[in-house]
Image 1 (tube, helix red, strand yellow):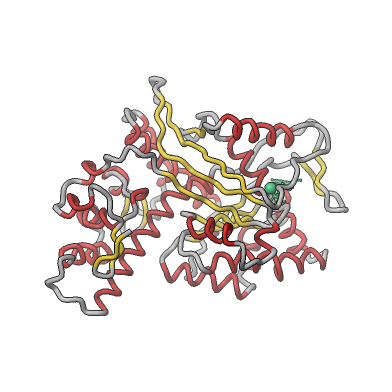
Image 2 (cartoon, rainbow, N blue to C red):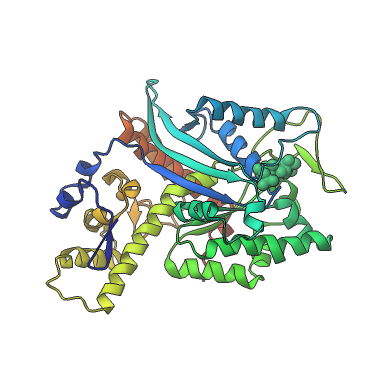
Length: 416
Ligand SMILES: Nc1nc2c(ncn2[C@@H]2O[C@H](COP(=O)(O)OP(=O)(O)OP(=O)(O)O)[C@@H](O)[C@H]2O)c(=O)[nH]1
Ligand SMILES: [Mg+2]
């Protein structure tokens, strides 16, 4: 990454050409697949490993979501399948907790199958899973862990639904104390120093869904000053921050016992709920955060009164326009060389950016989901290579994100 005139230029072989304003589609020449790193921050037992295996299983075939996930590494695929088998097995056991020394790196390739049965990779997601103790035992010396957090494109903060239930019920002082005074604070501490989008995932939603609404839980979380502080700082930076309810096993699969253990219900169906949502939000939210970051750098430069003769004055003028009006298609090819390679997308994707909000359709459009569904179908028929597969995957992600906004409007942690 190069710093030029105070702006971060993620230089690649196409960047110089881009300054001459060649159409965006021309620059997508990189054959390396775009990779997005996600670190899961969650206390021990919060459900990180079960979530990763359940997400893999739920998305391992191309069903309603119009893309699927593949784990290329045979050993890792075998391990994920073993974890999954352990979850659905009839006996009372669950997968073992992750060992302290173990950092598992799971790479899922997002692929698209066309109606004519051709198959193309679109991008890949690498998740880092580790023993929850590494988050809650604050250890400034844990540089391996610190580096993982620093390199992430998205932070996935897993909030243990079981502990939230006790916290909301007010029925277990010990659990309550360890949740809001210790575990959540540790997660928030790790998040404080990062600038990438944050997704708080409420795990084990099956335990909460009939008792509390997301709004009630959100309101309660905001009573924690540190939580409010982190959300406010993200809002100020224009970086998306969300609260996403997820159940890795689905409603009625297991019940919570008075001693805190989880008992599987015999014969119950395994029906994961919203496990695809956090992954779908990575690209749209990441792009949004990067664009806003660039605009803020521009604003900073303006306040430092950089001369108009600067070689970037052309870029700055266009970027300024980006935030004033909605003529973004025009401004975006100027922003393009300043984006990191994994966020340099095609015109198909940039055309969906509308005043900082994705999709060309107004946010309050009543039929937005239908329109996004139609766009998704249209782009599936255009898939003929990796580039168009990513276009289509992005449309699928937008559809999932919009569905979340419709079903859980409180998910977007944007404060008024
Ligand atoms: N009811 C319910 N229980 C769940 C769900 N996901 C996980 N659990 C329970 O939570 C336990 C812990 O899940 P893990 O995924 O192993 O937790 P972890 O965060 O990986 O824990 P460490 O590896 O110790 O850091 C499981 O053994 C299940 O009993 C869920 O969606 N619903
Ligand atoms: Mg684990």
